[in-house]
Length: 170
Image (cartoon, rainbow, N blue to C red; front, side, top):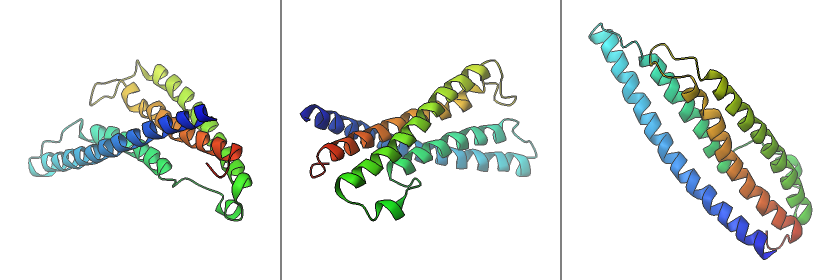
């Protein structure tokens, strides 16, 4: 049991650290996207010289910021829950239901991670016309954010497992 508690503590620390880094990356990405869009609008409407890669870059940044934002929301517990059911439970049954829910989320994220890697592999030879970089760099947001979320959910699974074994210490 002490091994489980130590593992839980380690994963919670990693999860917290990843969440902090992810939040800062999102702040930077949103700032960059804002600057890029304002610059593109200035070039298009003031200088009458549109930047051919402006919209592509904004879309690229938005995909990354949006998917990273999902991992932040998941970490903060803002995912769909079964509060009608869990609100009436306590102790071991509550931990068991949370364990099952988080296990289902974990399986979904694992499939998303594997699928995302395959999509990245398939996109390697196709390029964004404006930026002239592989589409893989945009699609990479899917497996990267799935991996971040897997770490968050794994930390929760360890917490729920400890709660099922010993509800008073979970």
